[in-house]
Length: 476
Image (cartoon, rainbow, N blue to C red; front, side):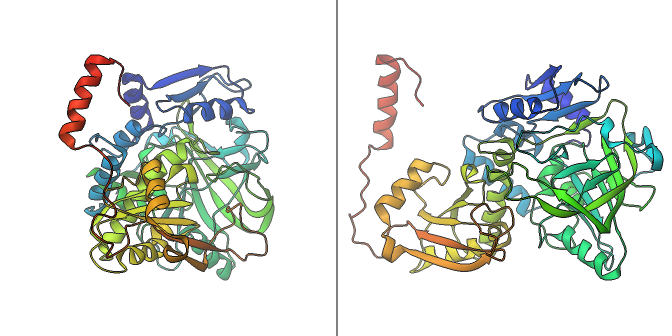
């Protein structure tokens, strides 16, 4: 885990995982190329420079976390033999993390250039319109929104989309129930605009902690420091004293206004669909912009899975839910997988070793309620420990042969939904339902009922040797 996006660029370039693209238009083309890169199993990170209409060196970087290898490197994890190995490695790291607060430094590269008040011009930055259906230009698809609880003083670092309104305003778009939205509600009660700082370029590892469901009042910077065994260097913004990464590429500082809103959206979201409607959202008055020489906007590929967002979300959300299940006493767990093809929220599989009657149902109910699985879930499936939850063929085999729809399904109503759920009607009130599917072997099943028709490990090893000698083609 590094503190500086430019160091990350050097590492990616050395590993042959970075491609520089010149002359690509901010209208649609950056988004379309990012989409293509995110759909390749080994797609490179893309650095866009010499964007028509913008200064050379004012760049956009995308697909930084678009492969499992780069996800592992960003999280400082040793490479495993499978996707589940990577999830397990992150679970161990996260479950043992000790909070390490950031270190405040006097200044940093982010203050190399400053635009104040009348100098502020957001249109100098090559914010992409990612797709033709988007409602405008999104300067932040991988930002950090830094706010402070006006009562406790605790700092929250959120990841949320940021759309440009005009040269001096962006939108504040954070879903209800999130910590930053609680800060905004407190500002509304007090009748004062909410101070905010928005980082638009930073090391990709910060996106990992920005998207985690950490307890309210815990700062994501502290978690990052613990995961990397080193404190993050931060600087206080001049106007409001909000801590931002000292090596950030671009930071906006201002206030979320209470009396001004504008039409925000639609935008292609993690669900794979354009957000349902244009909404009136609060405006952020940008009073200052701080940026490095030749600044880099960090962009995140979103949209129909697979994409960059679901690639890294699937690993960290799965590991966090796995950790929460074990800490709740639901075990032993073999693994958890929040499937990227369903946006990581819509299809969750938990694999366990059944120890008592009702164990699988207990695991499903817990997974639907714990923080990492509670928001905008849909289908939850429990499987036995002989099933790899990351292998959809294994999972569907278990569902199709070990479960009965009448006996092994339950429906939860009135669960925590959200405005980005495309299946919810406008009258749903933010509530959705969850289908629980117990695809474990029925407790107390007669011995021999589920004898798997397969070869022994020694027989399979012999077959692999014969395959290589007689067929000569690589095995999947």
